[in-house]
Length: 237
Image 1: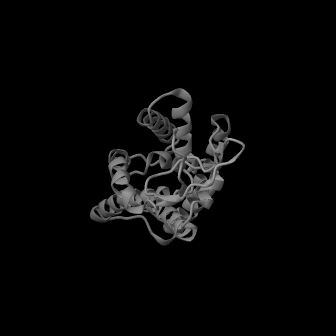
Image 2 (image 1 turned 120 degrees about the vertical axis):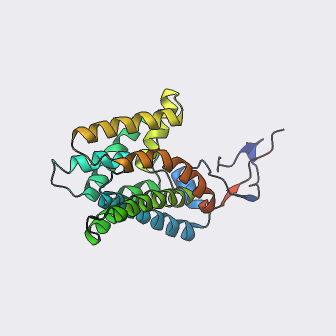
Image 3 (image 1 turned 45 degrees about the vertical axis):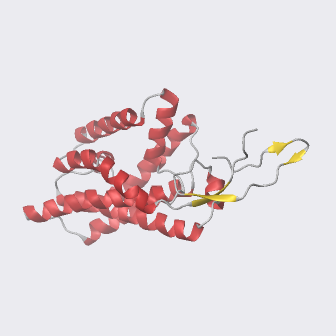
């Protein structure tokens, strides 16, 4: 959706009345901040990203496997002096470098995603010890996957920009012409393979996440999409 004024004749056309969009709007970084309900959206964004980091910590403490990108992160920290959260942050900015040739535009949510998720993951790992009982490990991994779905709906629904990895997926899809599903699957296969070779935490939780996160995010996203006030586009003559 465009937020610029259209020109008609010799002068600018009067701004159309704002309408409320309860769907995900395709807005640039500045337009995202001007689209209304900013305090509520900022709170929802921060809360969603913190929950996202908590979900990563729960899955890792279960010992039953983590999400695909975190297989890579957990493998990296075996060779570099970083915590899991620090690896998430570093890799987020590495991925953001790949946005430049893809011409993706980061928003406030993109930068917040790169930092808050890692900090929340480290805090969760500091508070929780690894689970020993099988039933507790199952509860942790299942809770982590479901919470990740809720967190995904919250941060995307705030409409303040995609996360670094989501932006890489959409950018590659646009540039290559491949479907989002195909590009996402390809990326996740690559990061899981590299992470596994590095000794990352692959397990049944990784498979559960891959199968469940799509339906969960699709289910929870409508709960959290914040309607935006965007200018009404001029009618076509």
